[in-house]
Length: 260
Image (cartoon, rainbow, N blue to C red; front, side, top):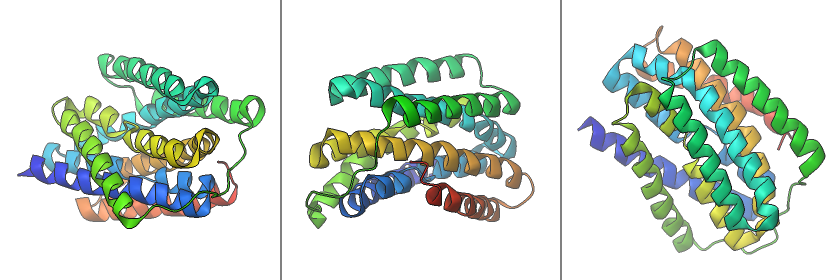
């Protein structure tokens, strides 16, 4: 029952998030679309279900590894942005391979202490910030193409939701560390970037990747750290609500500073 409900919620949340991300991008531009796509979605669902089915300590373990996992997601977007100068599929393939190797190493090592996870996050964030500001210098792209029809949004939600649910389903069988890593899998990133490339073009997808990176690396890590604290002090739903409220408050300056 719990497993089926988690998969159903992951399918629903993941599908809606990708459809919303691409719809906002088509109507408002790459920065706004990437910002929405980077807010906690499947990670939030996964951590709640880890706490529900595995207990508080399992949830705290999964939350501890999330900043490190999202640091790797940051490298995924960075590699994509660099590699896609030679074509979208080449960039995406190299980025996914990089993600797979690094996340496998995290699982193989049994996770990482929270201090190491946060320190690695700081280093990766700094590297991404410097390279995106200097070497890549990708400017936000305006919405220039036609907005998708409602049926197209539904089809996007169904396809993307299926991919997210598959990733979450695999994570349910891997323990707390693997669950935390796979809950952070960039499925929303990949789906959104594929759709953006197809409908708006490669430069739009690369610019949206930058916005996705800074939104997700900051906002999802804030949620994981807040949930790590609240879940041991409050009942599950209030812990989730407070952690997400903290994330929203933190997201406001992230958006206003135009990091993406």
